[in-house]
Length: 229
Image 1 (cartoon, rainbow, N blue to C red):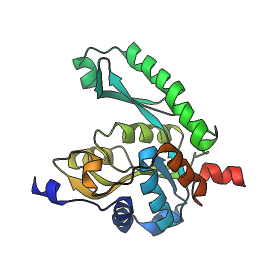
Image 2: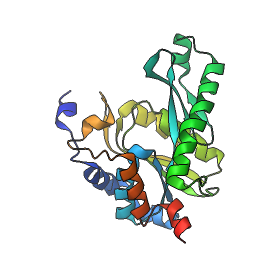
Image 3: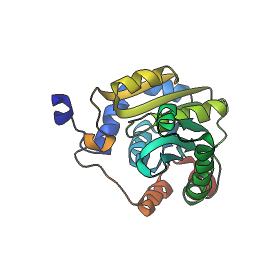
Image 4: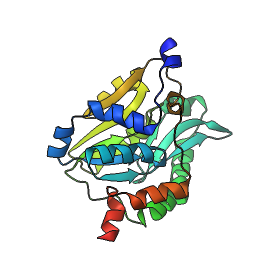
C-alpha cells in the first residue's frame, strides 16, 4: 500500500518522459511505427510522446457500455469499427442480454463515436493501417477493455503488429495484455491499482475545444496533416 501512496507522476509530460525512456526508439523508427492515441483523455500524453520520438499519430475512439440502472458498472466497450469487448462475467451477473449490449453499442457508435470522428478527424476514417506496426498509447489502464478493443480492431484491420504502452497499469493486467499484444511497455506496474488519475499530482485535463486546438497545432497528428497537405 505504501507504493500507491508515494508514487505519483508530476503530469503527462513527466509520465511521457518516463515512458519514452523504456520504449525502444530505434526499433520504432526503423519499423515505421504509427502511434495510436487511445481516446481524448490520452491526447496530452500522446502529443508529448510523439514530440519526443518525432513520430506521427492517429486517434482511436471507443465508448463504454454500462449496465442498465447502474451507470458506474462498465460491461463492455465498443470501438470505431464496432468491434466489441464484453465483460461476460458481469453481463451474466446482471443478467444482461447480448441484444441489449449490441444495441447499446450501435447507439453509442452512432451518437458518440461518429460525432468524435467528425469533430476531431473532419469525418475521415482511420488511416489505412494494413501492414503497419502500431504503438497504442494509453494514459492509464484499469479494466483493460479499451486496450483490448483497440488491439482487436487493429488486428482485424490487418496491422502487422500491435504494441501497447501506458505509464501505469495494474500488474495482473499487464501480464494479460502481453498474451494478446506483440509487446507491452509500462513505466510502472501497480499491484493494488486505484485509477490512472490517482497517479498524477497535477494531471492536465483539457476541455474538448482545447484538445481540438492541440490536434490542429500538432505537427504529428496524421488526420489533420492530410487535410493540410
